[in-house]
Image (cartoon, rainbow, N blue to C red; front, side, top):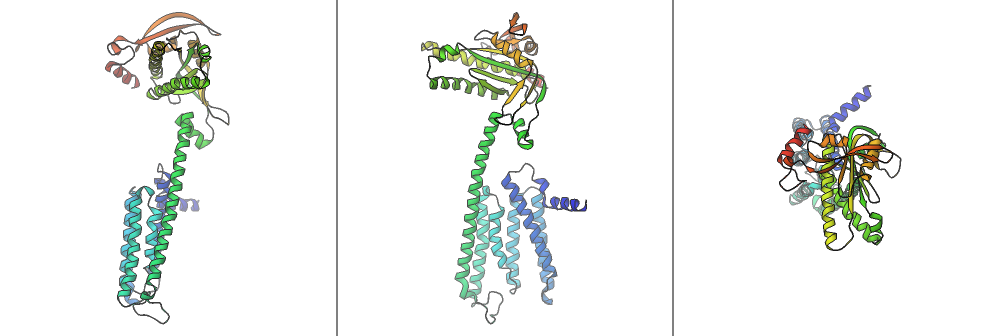
Length: 444
């Protein structure tokens, strides 16, 4: 229990609870910055307990306290979410403290921390701030060289004190070696970090591609559940709408086309259908041959699922009518589309372990299929259940009780368009402002 509390307290100090929602690179940058602040704070603490000359104790403690205050400010900036500001302030504080100790206490080896300060921004700062990262790395590099040059100008004083001791190298003897080694270290670190950034960028691009591919197959909510849990439980939806489409005479026309032409024609139609799904917040389920299936009200419930499906069906119907006119003027064979819609309860989800597909099951799906097969090419055929949900928005034509295969007689309607007071003048499928008001009212 005590260990758990200590671990939780340490995680709180690091601010790990603030990482939720951040990209992976920024999470790492945040984590490294927090750890760096803690490590430097520990070094400051040890500077208080290390033996120093009596005449320097007060001055060194004042500097340590000042540096500890700067680290606290950087930590506060970090926890407030100002990641880059925290990193810049941390680097600046380290430079100032190093330079102060170098010239106030020549016997100290604070100049070695300039090498750390040179590499620190390359490790901490995210790659999207590339220019800031390079500048933050070059400043301590220049300070290090300036420090060595300064001692050389003063007459080659020893690297670790104002007076050369026996066997101690002089600054003028090793200046070029120091500059060369630091330049090599900086270049090596930069090339390593740049290689890591390029590799991460490629990984991020591939990750985004795979994410997009997954979202093209599954709804976002279902895809996220599969990634987190490995499985997705099928869910009951008490009110949803399913629509089937099917081309009349597909087989006959397909026989007159080459395989390439057939696939290209289907792709042209189904790609447009996909764009309609996106505009109306509907879920494409699957295509089977020349049949296209979609639904509204899944995976998230919607009060307008039936209206959305009928609006999409009207748009698809208008597209196919336009295609028909173009093909007819060119004396080319054309497809006509039947659309069938039904509303009711269904179960939706992903089953199996390979080649995942989001699908729906229930009698609602079967009746929607029967509405399509019992329809007429070029018309939108809906069940009485769907009619009750859309009658206040669309002008419907009662067909009576139509015999459906294995389902007996089902009351069906043709959708002719929007109600006259909800459409633009001369446009049966384009809504006006009154439609939008009623639609928003239905959404609540």
